[in-house]
Length: 156
Length: 156
Length: 156
Image (cartoon, rainbow over all chains, first blue to last red; front, top):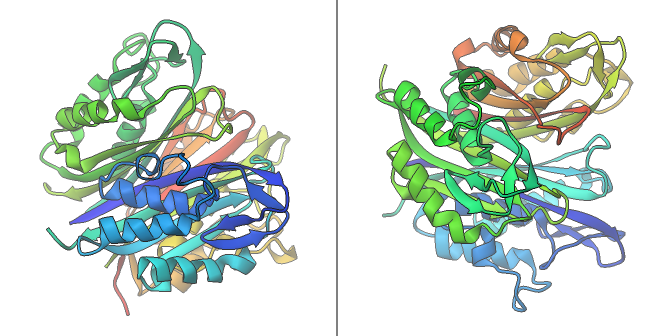
C-alpha cells in the first residue's frame, strides 16, 4: 500500500556566526536560522512529511521545544524517525523537496546534502532530491522548505 | 491506477467572537477566519487536493462565492465531494496536511479533527493526518494549509 | 515503481504591457511576471516537480539564468524535459497544481492551459489539473504555484 506525506518548515534568518544547517550540512557561515533546535528546516520538513505519511503525529509532538532539544542537531531527529517509524514497516520510494532561500547559494551543497540524508535514511542518493529555488524577492530574509515523500507499507 | 493531489488555502485571521473552524472543529473562540463560507482552510485544502487528483475542476467552481455558500459549513462541501466524486470511483489511500498558524495551539484539537474528517470521508482515522506548524513569526495573523492526497482509481 | 515530485515557483507581478504567461497561455495583458525567462511560474513548478520525482537536478541547473534563456518561452523547457527525462523512462500518471493569484481571473483560461500542457507532455488532459486560488489578500501583487506529480518508472 502506497502513502504520500507533505512537510513544511520556515525560519527567519539572522546574520551571525552560528552557521546555517540544511540537510545536516553547514551551508553558510554568515547566516543562521532562528529556531529552538538547530533550525534545520530541510530535515524538519522531511521528518514531518514522513510522520504525515505514516500517520505518526507531528514533529512538535516527537521533538517538543524543551531543554532536551535546545540546539540539538536535527540529524538525530531523522535517525530516530528511521528507527522508530520506518524500520521494518515502510520503504521510502522517494523524497523530493524545495528549499526557498535568497541569501545562500545552495547548488554547491546539494550533493553533500543528498548523500548525508540518504545515509541517515538508509536509502540510495537516487531516491532523494533537494531543489533550491530563489524566492524572487518575495521571501526576504528567511528559509522555507516543502518536502513530499512516497512510502510503501512493507511490514504489518 | 494511483493519483496524487495538492490543495492549498490561506485566510487572514480576525480577533472576534465568531470562532475559528478547522477540519469542521471549533479551535478558537477568540479568532475567526475572514472568508466567504466558514473559512475552514483545512477542509478547503483537502477538497482542492481531491478535486486535483480526480481532475474534477477546483473548489471555486464547485462552491462559488455566492449567496448559497455565504457562511456555509465546509463540512457540507466535503460530504458533496465524497458522494459526487469519490464514491465508487476512487479509494482514498491517505491524506496528509500541514496547518501553519501562530495564534492558536492546535495539538489539543488534532484527534477530534482527524475523527471528524475520517467519518465524513468514510475512511479510517489512520489514513488522515493533520500536522500543525508554527510559522516562526513569518506568517503573522493568518492560517495557511497545505494538503496532499493519494487516491487509487477503483471504478470505471 | 512509483515516485512523487513537488515543484514551486513565485514571481512578483508588474503592471505593464508585456503580458503574463501561465502554462504557456497568455492570461493577462495588464500584468507580467518579473523573471529571467518568460516568468511562467506554472511551467517552472511543473518542470521542477518532474525533475524532483526523477532525481534529475533542478530547474536552475537545467535552465540557468544566462543569455540563452533570457525571455525564453518556458514551453521549450517542458519539451526538453519530456524528451530528455521522461521519454521511455517514466510515465506521468498525473500532475496537479495550485496557482495563487489575486490580480488575474484564471478560470476562463484553465481549459486552454490544460490542453496546451497535455499536448506538450504527450498525456491526456484528464491527467493534468490546474486549480486557481485567491490568496485572500495575503499574497498581494504576485503569482505563486505549487505542483505535484505522480510518475511510474517504465524503462530501465
